[in-house]
Length: 113
Length: 113
Image 1 (cartoon, one colour):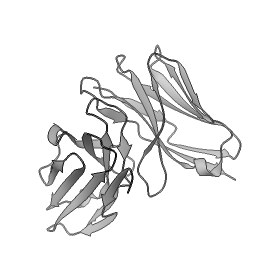
Image 2 (cartoon, chains in turn brown, green):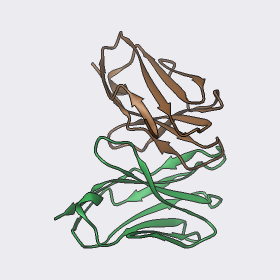
Image 3 (cartoon, helix red, strand yellow):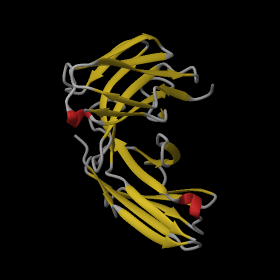
Image 4 (cartoon, helix red, strand yellow):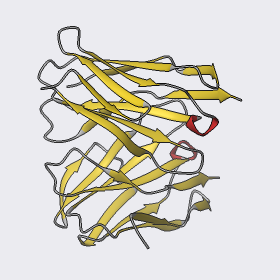
């Protein structure tokens, strides 16, 4: 595997379900990001981790819970989501937190029913 | 904080023609301007970037120009090919928020064979 991988690629969940999105980067980077991409809206930054420590939380509702067990893995735990949370969730990484150059994964297409 | 406007939202060109996408930003202190290409079913991929100490950068058929006085930067694609069809995003640093990027709304480019 190379670059940034995300699983699953597609997820359909009910509003009462609990699910998790997984991201793994094979680039040796130290910073990882979660973005939300909705139709007709700019990319929205959700969370940033640097060396497994959360450094940014962009006013994201508590029904989204990130976890970064090590610098290669990033999770987004989901519970009691709303239909408006349906979107493409993108993971990205960069060499270090101060590096603007970000590498994105293919995303997880989430549908909340 | 930074505000990034991107135009046009859709652009259709004939194969072989040139395509130009423009972004404006609000923070005069911004110093890094990347362009991302997002193909269907994939995450955004960095295709070219420019820093504020230069006015133009080229990489084969793509180029980016920066006008710091007017606070705008543009992506130029020459001799367009069908595989250039994708959504293109510009971005700029998010003002005082460290290395975070603010993204434009995206441009859907369609290259007709």
